[in-house]
Amino acid sequence: MIHVMRQHRFPGLGQFFRRTQGGEAEAKTPSKPSYLSAMEVFQNLSPADMEWVDQVTTMRACPKGSILYEPGETGEVLFLLKKGRVQIYRLSAEGKRLILAILGDGTFFGEMALFGQGMYDAFAEATEDSLVCAMGRADVERLLLEKPQVALRVLQALGRRLLDTEAVAEGLALKRVAARLTSLLLRLAGDDNIVSGLSHQELADMVGTLRETATETLNQLRAAGLVAIGRKRIIILDREGLSRLAEDGGTFS
Image 1 (cartoon, rainbow, N blue to C red):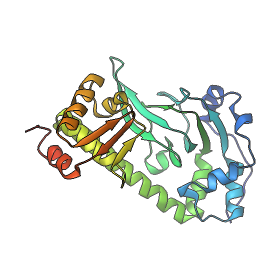
Image 2 (cartoon, one colour; image 1 turned 45 degrees about the vertical axis):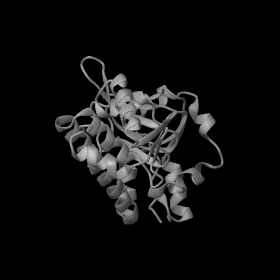
Image 3 (cartoon, rainbow, N blue to C red; image 1 turned 90 degrees about the vertical axis):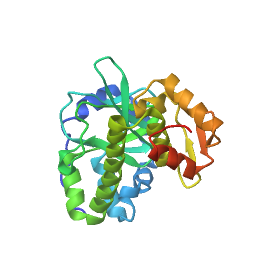
């Protein structure tokens, strides 16, 4: 069982509380512990340990469009996204958005130097109505030290995220739009070869191009028989063909 210490407030949540004012009452439901225990990072913890996690986290209902974090904020906070979707993005000097990550149910994010997870000059925005929990550094440290299985899951998730970030950076530096977009689709597609829930604007923001360019490229992929396109739904019809296009630098034959 995790050693229980007096619950405390911690730096970094002040802005989060103000932006989600009134959301806590909506989020206080008898199912909060079940929300947390369903997250991959907390699986197989004992009921006593989950009670401690429940005590040291604060959950907020965050409407679509809520800014959870923005550049310049201080304090180390780990956000746990129970339900919904959050974009992590940066803005260029011209105001252009570059999406670094789109996170869904059961994931985490935040400014936590403890394990190299940083927001730095990034924004975190709820793009759907979301339920978000927050935990401070001292409690995260205690959890990782006393529950190594949780630490391992955190490291595995961060490793996957780092690989994705490196792929995005490499694509922006070296690849044409078609190659960047096909590589992105291949990374995002599940075992069913479907990419769902993303608009053309979001895809464009993830590969650093204009929406019109992303749409034109998707139409080229469809015309080549590589994908089928629906409303916020892309089905990969020819995975090998997409892989060849990505490797060839995004040049259509």
